[in-house]
Length: 156
Image (cartoon, rainbow, N blue to C red; front, side):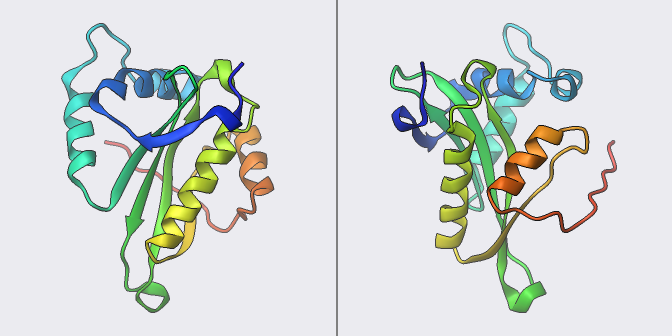
């Protein structure tokens, strides 16, 4: 059993991409967006390379005691003019393997991201979660996030 106390958070590596995509695809919303094929489409590896090169992005994974990737999260630090020129942290793609949920791993990753954002001078951390993800909304509220905006999306 994977418990949060046995979890290490580290920067994602190229060899983690398949596990990350698997977690992103493992719900009704993600399964409609992602392509799980063997081999994975090259677009995922190209995207990983872009993220890895961007100093304002950190894609991290949660790894259990046996070395398996059981969670992922991306932190974007967005410099801005608003709020007296402060930066904000944006959390994206926060996922935990379905076999390891409700064990404190997501909370550990979010706490890591908040601490990292603060260390990089961010004055707030924000995230978007789909309106149908009611459990996720309760989770983030339990961690102190407040409903503050109405999110909108334009897909191409």
